[in-house]
Length: 239
Image (cartoon, rainbow, N blue to C red; front, side, top):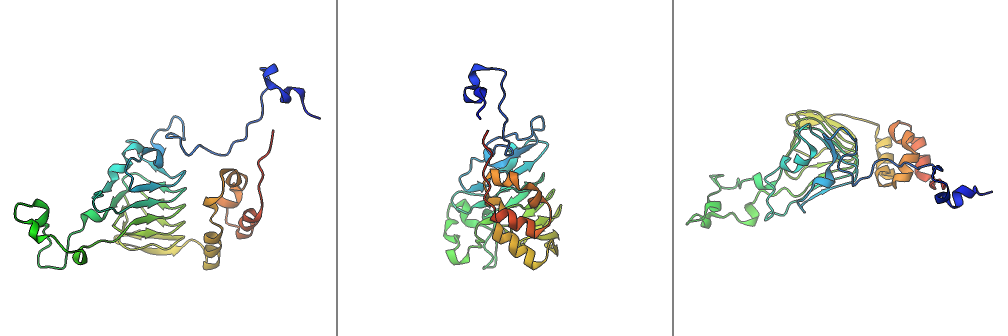
């Protein structure tokens, strides 16, 4: 039997419907009210060559609006992209070095004479001699520690952790912990079978309702429970 107040709650201003919460809104610049140093990065991006997924945050006491200033040598005429997945945690002083920092190393001098023109433009490098590393791609659910530097064209796999003050000069595999200068893999977080299961399930692509309903399986380390969650069809409760 339906509650008559639920049929028309406006007739009773004291009637309160139960609210279903499914986490913060990805479009919220300040998802932790009263703690503005954490912000969802995508809401502060103006550069079309930077793509950031939902729920990825930047933690900086000076304000997350400064994130783009941490992406260096990112010139539009080069066209390289910085692509960051969903649910990433990015600590203060992250630095992304993009392809604009590279100089040609095929000749005797690495000095970029051609950028000054006035007769020096004839020294412009050919496409073959350009040191272009491609896009920088950070997977989903990646934790980038304090003062990490990531060099051009690096790919960091899903679920990886990069230790504080590391300099990442080569690709980092999924679900590994890497650190150092240059960064190298310290260990893997899980066995290979579990990693393959996590990559197949890709929980970060679930709708918010399903993530909320299965948070325990996501934050714990029972592959079977996560598999059951992945195979279930979650239907939001109607009130």
